[in-house]
Length: 211
Image 1: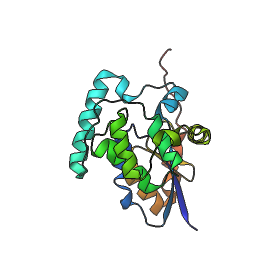
Image 2: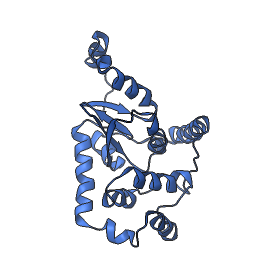
Image 3: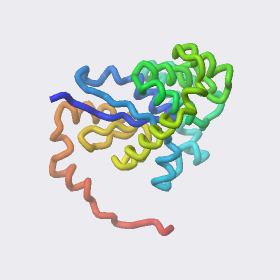
């Protein structure tokens, strides 16, 4: 039986970029469905702050991602400002079918070359890379907008709380550093069904912060 997984991601995430650059480590027979989602929508649903919204976490995260990219030998250049509004490039990926090559080109534009998604001249160069004439015409299509919304709804229904996240057999593998765990699971699906894994999955809450 063919193995399948869904990858939920947002171009705003450098971790999603690093994960995308490592997909070649996954089994060749794994069928991946790519679903662009708006990370901000997930944060709103789960009432959670993104790492860039906490000043010291923002600084650490940016330093860590730069260090990690160097360790992995992956070229990385931050865009001129971050966070940025990713909606147009998310819609662009949807409009072009959310295929691997399209997504890779958009990621490379933003994180490989530090491209500015808010700059019309830079976006024109991205359009040229993708072989399209008018980004605005594609991204303003109603069906494209609706598909991006449905992707977000599907992510929330699956329990996705951050990006990037793989969903395989209903199990979440969040973050670029969970790739090893996903590989282990694909090799042994019983990994998540041991007695201890079952126990900690339903571990009682011992204390809660007051709102």
